[in-house]
Image 1 (spheres, rainbow, N blue to C red):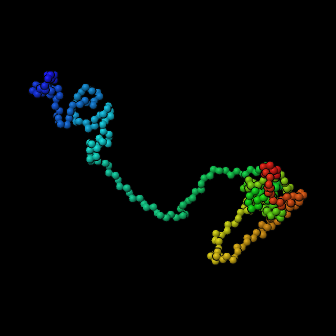
Image 2 (cartoon, rainbow, N blue to C red):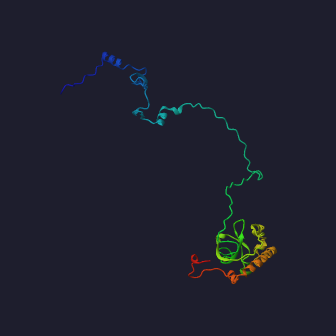
Image 3 (cartoon, one colour):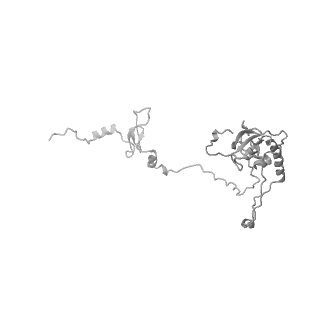
Length: 269
């Protein structure tokens, strides 16, 4: 067996005194040990301090997270001294009902400008147009003019095709090349937008007995006498102008329609 090359550990007083000179004892040898000081100004200086609870795995990276260090140190057990919060003052209780007179409804601001509707170049007073929508669709009527609202004022005349004076949107008509020479004495001042507005009827539709009475029929609304007089006076002047052109009355009385093989985009009106 080969002799051991290691020196035996000497436990005499001389070796112990040398060890103490190299590593002097800290004040509390149970909780402290010699470590490098954190001062960057003098990295060679040595000092004794309490052992750190969070060791470094690598430079500037600790083994424990911030919350783990907080729990390990027991900082949650400390006494918190905060500023006493002032008690909130009780506000006045809002009323559950507000009078309607106090609420002011402000209209929504609109920056739109109402511009007059531009009339199509093919539509002039006296032009015969074909109605495409509404109760009298397919009828040929005579244009009398344009109202301030942009709608067309037209009439049949009523004695020829049963179309009374009414307002029509120019987007739902087909302008033809046929024209009627209107008399210069034709007065259309009374035919404005307010002339065609309906009166607001009562919201009450009837009694309970009238509702369950199946035999009774609702009364037919009669045309006011002044409206009938206005239509009669207007037809008198329009019919006189229509009769100046032969076959024009029959043209206005006939309804427009398409037959098999007719293509509206190829027709010349």
